[in-house]
Image 1 (cartoon, one colour):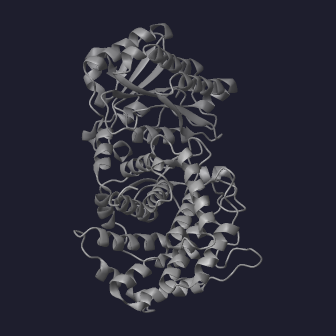
Image 2: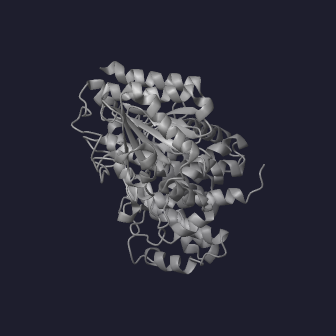
Image 3: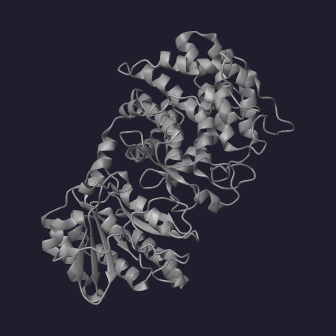
Length: 574
């Protein structure tokens, strides 16, 4: 039965080839067999506003070939009627939401004991559920695409329209009944918000289900299209919530995040240090933000004075980068002790043996150390003017040799996997190094060329939503928050410093929109990959849990991105 899922992908590729100005081929998830769940994305699926009704077609949850065929029939018919419908509907589609069930002929299951058609809303195991990953991926992807209407189609002996709680205005026009069961995808997505449910933390999405014989499909669809033509749907509650988030300025988002993040140094680790550093930068940029210096001095004093241990010994680079704020704090207080912290950290590094990584870096040249080392050694250079610090740093970056021919980075030499945040760490490492390294340094031009090649490779992997995936070469792996922040920060810095041309700006804007939509007004975030050491398989990276809500790592990186966006906006265009 494998030919069924392969034919779906081929069909979608053919549709994109026929209408490249209409659709982009994407993936909304990945199964336990690492099969991408293919999706067609309309060019206006993620724009801020459109006169069209954004409709997402959903088919094949059952894993039955006839249901997938019906969904592809909808797409063919839509393309044939494009002259009529193009001004009315912006149609995206997930025509085969259960590709492994289809391929293995185990409908309604998915081949690993799950049934993706029911069980909504999923409550946990994002995105590492061993039985029902399709549920989690579909729930989040649809919720954050936030169409105005979800249209599910499936075959049956007679035409039947069903509507969710928030699609009741369509009941009379479609002669519809309430959708069942209550734990189906469109019923859960279209929940009545008066009951306190906010799917995916953003809001409901109205849904309708059409059950029909294939021969009656065209007539039944005409009912819906005519209805939308005469009475277009308003943006869904989910879309309105995302647009409100997107409308906030970078400085507004940074100010809000600063109320949540950057108020602790326990433990001393880069995730805390970055947000403290961001609060200090925010104070310089925003005169309306209450000066945080005294509170930060009070926060760090027990560590600086030696009353509390700074690190567990031997200290790892991730802990030492928790002092990244030292250079900023000495600038505003003139207290030399903060500069000494940075220098003492830099003094812990020593040259590696025979081209090895400089201890205390991981000897396997992990991308995390590219950022940690870059953050501290470059600042020590700025504070002292001693070239030995940046010489040690540039040798480490150039001798790692984990950047591949396609421009992307392995996690480390022994983990040949394109982990998203691993690539983000490399971006930050190069970005921080180049920000402090004098252009006359012998390695500057080489490092800059490698950095731009990396940015270009990631730009090519950017999803229609603006996000980057958890595993960069696994279509459908979840849209991960932290790597997108790191990518956006590095892009904004590169544009501001003139390292890349203006052609990179659209990718930056898409990244910002995707990130802004995933930050709520209380500092909650969507899908930050949890703490991740070196893994032994690509599946292990796919399965790393995603944090939904407060996350110190994601919050600090979002603050850095927001402030760099604000700084870029204040910089005259080159």
